[in-house]
Amino acid sequence: MGDSPLTSEARARHVAIIMDGNGRWAKKRALPRAIGHQRGVEAVRRLVRGLEPMGLDCLTLYAFSSENWKRSEDEVDDLMNLMRKFIKSDLPDFVANDVKLHIIGDWRSLAPDIVEMLEDALAQTANGSKTIAVALNYGGQNEIARAAAEAAKQGEVTTASIEAHLDTAVLPPLDLLIRTSGEVRLSNFLLWQAAYAEMLFVETLWPDFQPEHLADALEDFAQRERRYGGRK
Ligand code: FPP
Figure (cartoon, rainbow, N blue to C red):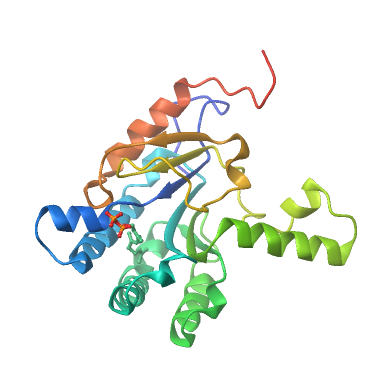
């Protein structure tokens, strides 16, 4: 964990990103959408490599939503193949950067070979001291429904018992949610966790996103006054 120059109160521990704009990035250059997604993966790679000085405990990335199945079969195949390639090529980077992988969403219903690769990646990164959580086949409403059903099986349904069964239960509370590409909506991402998170919507298309953009966002976060519904 890197030492942050900010105080522990101001420092963001958990940031989540809706990585949007791969398609528009490609379209602007008259390139196939698949190239936009490839460049999107490169942006993820840069971020993993540049994470250390940011002092984050957790970065959560929205890689594939439960609604993304509605895209063309070719695009879904491209995204799944990118996932396979990314796990193969970048797992050593995760280990080298002391990153523990966590996955949220209904990932066990992905293709069996991907599930197997992910299980192996989880095992290999289990000792990392900071977390990258990847949302795969993820939908926030579905996550809340699953958590509530689990809480009901075990007793009283309360906000605390639902929270304890969310896919993010082991992660620190969400501090900051960023969406790239200028769109201003949550798209079913971390609906529960966003209750008191700060939000930042930036115009940058995801393939152009640099570690410096995240560093700037963390600076911006540190200046905000969070009240959690109360008053100082
Ligand atoms: C949004 O761009 C992005 C996605 C649907 C997927 C995000 C995926 C990646 C960055 C690559 C896969 C990641 C990993 C970790 C392997 P869009 O296609 O909706 O862009 P548009 O709104 O401009 O069309």
